[in-house]
Length: 129
Ligand SMILES: [Zn+2]
Image 1: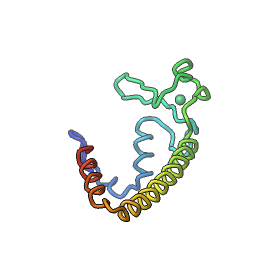
Image 2: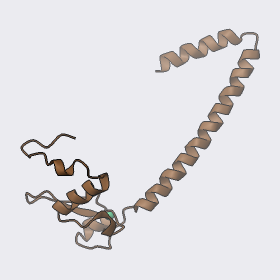
Image 3: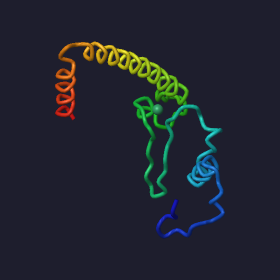
Image 4: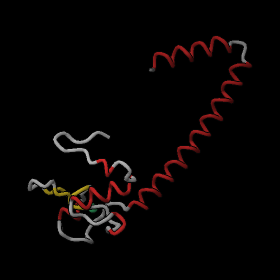
């Protein structure tokens, strides 16, 4: 990563792990280390120029901006569970589609007009791109 424009590059940071870099940036912004932060994702970002932004932001925190408990954003564990569920569903759908494709290909290949049918399918696929 290149240094920011106008800021000297400090080579002491070159060997930082990603977690160390994240914690250094958080410390510079007055935030606690990630491990000590509330499990709720909403937090205030101070841009250092008078700007304050609620990230990612939700209606509950918008109504009660300084609350530390009124956040309805999904927690990381919940997002991970949803992502895993999506992957499981998509993997199952992909398996079903592959199985269907293999059986259709075998049926078309066994058909007397199989080559014409495959050519027509290829042409359709090409125009659908
Ligand atoms: Zn929130």
